[in-house]
Image (cartoon, rainbow, N blue to C red):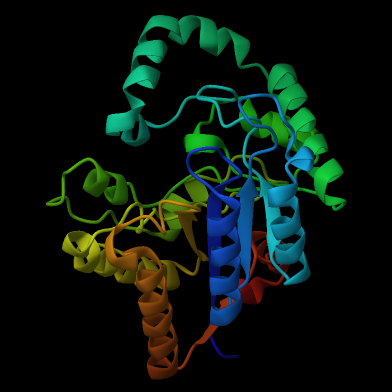
Length: 300
């Protein structure tokens, strides 16, 4: 049987004010359609003003369009607030714009941890999921935590609430080293052991992403990011795990010289050439579809 490599293209921060616009979202959907890739879009159920996604008509039209195109919508927290369901990893807290979050955590860690119980988290999860399902008219069963924030009780809460999969872990912290100015950092190794260590609840597969290669990407960092992405793809293939990537609605389009979307077009062309050269099957799939395929041992 021909080797199969699964590719999961995911998008974060859908409908998050300041990091997403309806126009950018529509443009990204059109890009995915032109490239013939299936994508998972993680949407924020409610904005800071308490307005649910269902009342934001400018987004609902685009979201229904992407569903009709065969893409998937997952849940991205509740309001995308820091610490709403866990603690972001250090690599994210080190980002320049995370100064207020670092200060808040230093002053409130004990109180935050006491509040992060499975019942509290489940209540928030179900509230947010209800808003999305009301807006979209379809079940929402995939989850990614905002800023990859997790805690020990999150996976228990996800299981109790009936989610089908989670994607709140990462395999390539080096991408954030680059964002923090440490461009000399060598890529981390991606292997099956690392992937398996991130599986928290047997009934809920965790599909960890690699990193964000296109966060306000500039020409100066284009080659470095491309080499990292190619490294990660080859290591995921060697480990027999899906190559799951992430970009963010506006940052992928707000870099210089349209580097973000150009990067994805170039990487996709390289992946397809690699598949033809190495004689394997490259298959694009939503994370929901990857979850369905996990019962078929041929995916790994």
